Image (spheres, rainbow over the protein chains, first blue to last red):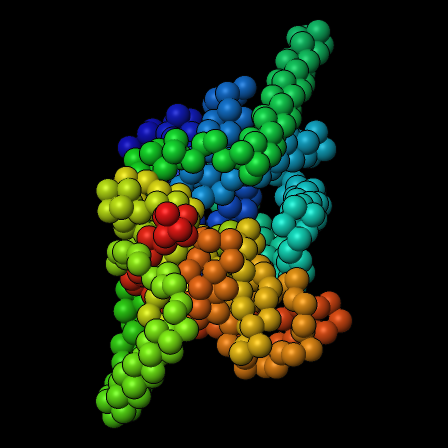
Length: 164
Length: 281
């Protein structure tokens, strides 16, 4: 049992199970407007150190994106963009810092997240002529920053501790 | 040794670069898909068929979370039970009088319609269906309904409750359909406001109070005015109650609406098979 838990393949399996669980509760539960499950999935993708799928990993996230779009009713490709954006951000942050350096990763995440939310705000304003509440966006933003450390610590524990 | 280290560093660097390039390519593919999906709607049938299958997988995976949510909801419902009982007793006392008044009003309206020789536009069937889930998320507001093409549902059918308009059917599966709510940012409903019948377009704003734009005579409106569907465009029947006017913004020329009904407080909805073209034939 102990071997199974520290096995890299089981870690890979659990990661995808977590993503599936988050997408599923995102479609079937509605907690409130500020608690954004898609961004939480994005945060987990950003925090995660490495995948056994290597070059197929972006393709796997793209597929999860399509799954999420069909289930939740987003336009095709919408969730994929968010998942892949956080993967891109993760690869980008890996150039500047190692996984243990949570502070640098938080700064990069904060900058990436605000860019994403700003882009979404402008896209919705431009394509749908709807002005979203900036206060709601900011609450969502800071909520994600608050949960960054707990999730980062959990994943650091799972990945680094088990790799030793 | 240094050469070996250099080689391994190059391998890591190449791997990072390859992942970044693949990710960027896939981001562009996703953006193209969003563009095609929002302009041509070519995947509608495929999406509905796949959704029916993956809904089974996801509802199984999410069962623990759904059970916890149901438990919490039950607790809050028990808390509200006494308040609702008082309200119910009060409504019971009023309902007999209201029913009599409504009957008289209905007779009067029918008499006026006969006198004016109005063409009736209410020959449509309806289906009552359970709400599977409120999947409103991020900037999109929709519900999944336990009825589909096997129950006679079609795209753009109108969704109503006992209080008023909820939205329209946006995707039809075999047994499950998706309903686009009035609060969704892509929702557009032609409306008529107050007895002056001021016309406008109700646009969802991703929060509980949608707004009406493109108003011609905003000065004729006042807070509390009734907002109903105008029937223009042929998707929604006319005169379905939507809500009341909550706030007027003279500067930006729009008004905010307090909806009569919100989907998150409902467990069932009525779907009206309304098609204006069919009635014209």
